[in-house]
Amino acid sequence: MTAASLREQVAAERAALRAAYLARPNPRRLLKAHAQLIDRTVKSVPGLPDDAALVATGGYGRGELYPASDIDLLVLLAREPTTAERESLERLIGTFWDVGLEIGHSVRTVEGCIQAAAEDVTVRTTLLESRYLSGSRALFRKLEQALGRASDPAAFLKAKKLEQEQRHAKHQDTPYALEPNLKEAPGGLRDLQVIQWIALAAGLGRRWSDLVAQRLIERDEARQLAKGEALLQDMRIRLHYLAGRREDRLVFDVQTALAAQLGYRDSANRRASEAMMQRYYQTAKGVTQLNTIVLQNLEERLAPEPDVAPRALNERFRIRGERLEIVREDLFDEQPLAILESFLLLMQHQELRGMTAPRCAPCIGRATASTRAFAATRWRGSCSCTSCSSRAASCTSSAA
Image (cartoon, rainbow, N blue to C red; front, side, top):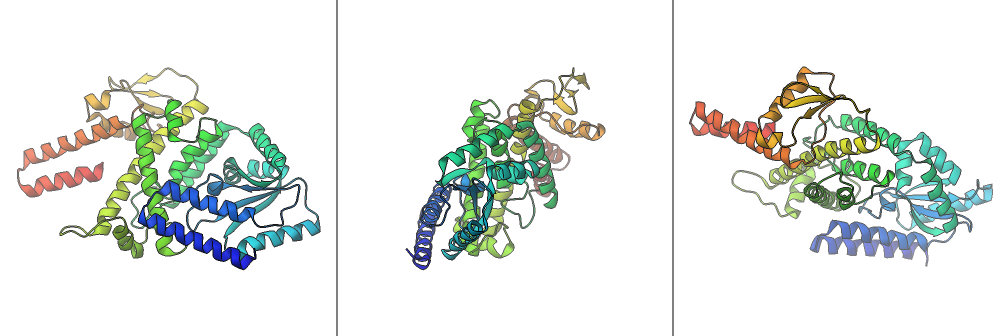
């Protein structure tokens, strides 16, 4: 098959995937089907050296390929290529582009992969999800074994946490941007992937249910993570289709069209795009909170701090290491206003790096709801007018 005819076939199959998705949206199925389409396509292109291996990496290696995302490929070589082999590989990559694939490629030996991974955590992350496509299986197994020997889960966790902090800083450390990035912003897909990468590097699994089995999250938290992931995946897929290119920002120009696709309608009090963005912000806030909790749990598992005796602050809180800790796990259920006291204590003790992760995130949600109701009641107690009651509800909702 010629490059031109293969290009037409890829375009037709992608169009069919789009039509099927918009008719019956299923993010996981679409991402997998698109990856499988690209698998078939790259395997059909000749030119790979006999002793080399073609490897899918990154999101493509994970088997999740968004409509307009780059296709990350590694050409794994048994040795450094000769001049003639380099020219052959350049033709291979050129053919991939000719058939309509936006390739992000690298050409390395096993030793080159290990060195690059040691120098750059982004490369290490990309290789973590390597998946064999074609060529030498023995060479691919050699890569897997070498990556396993070089693995340092505690160091990887530390590097990914630093990378996340830097990424969040670029997005003003808030999930509430007016034009948020679905992939990179706090509360976006990357915050979920960071958890999955660290768990995978540590051999703790790659699914949310695996983290439940490892007692890192509760079953309700796993459901919340999966629900948030599905919403963000759906919005990103539709955004790619609407833009006709890789676009991960929910810019104003597409918010109205995206809201209509998702079934939102204008009401007398609110536009459809506002209702959609409210749902996004709620999801992003939940993802941000769970990301913090799960990363703390992973840190306690993979890089525990020296066990030191806690220092009591009062009958409700104590300091353990560099974190504030509740004395009883049911504190926020029994005394919802204690969550506000925790904020005050963190302000008073600047040396603390945050709170230890509660075993069950829903208790914070319940406490927040109770605190909101309490605050609204106290406000109405001082003034019974409708205006003040509305302001109280709005204020406490924003604070949450």
